[in-house]
Length: 202
Ligand SMILES: N[C@@H](CCC(=O)N[C@@H](CS)C(=O)NCC(=O)O)C(=O)O
Image (cartoon, rainbow, N blue to C red; front, side, top):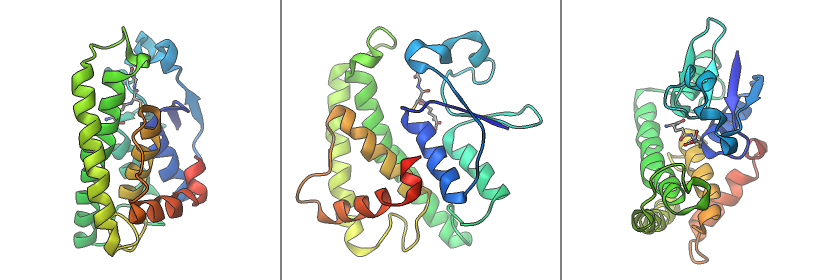
């Protein structure tokens, strides 16, 4: 088994944190996305969409999409559970995972993709759309701050994949100056707690 990874990129970090929480070690291969190694034929044969992470299983299966990779490790290494513990809880975790991905993470990365020089000449950029995404990301952080007034973690009283997606999205926000605001005390409390877990260094 091998994880095709990119140390600086947010999606692979989601998988690395998930693995660290599980205590699972997987050999990694760094893909140099800065130099477009992800767009070369050898990598496109693994993932035609040219994105990392990709998990190569021992039977040759190429598994892309961060949450699908996490699902694989949840089933092969159930402890600690990060995708919920019963039908109700799994649905609640999924709800929050999708919200953190669509409302926080994707708005931050869309702002990055549309405004940052890193993607200049690589993809069509629409700076105005990037700024709209920035505004949405900032609104969603304000919403998340309110949500976290009533509970310890994003999906309830246990650390889950929803916390991982939110943490990685918010940390990556620094690259485009999307940050937790001084008055967002609940969000700051949560961020400090999840950042102090050993897995956050992954
Ligand atoms: N939906 C995919 C997104 C993967 C993705 O966008 N990966 C980025 C790095 S965070 C990438 O490979 N970017 C390279 C590029 O767009 O050229 C997932 O959940 O893993």
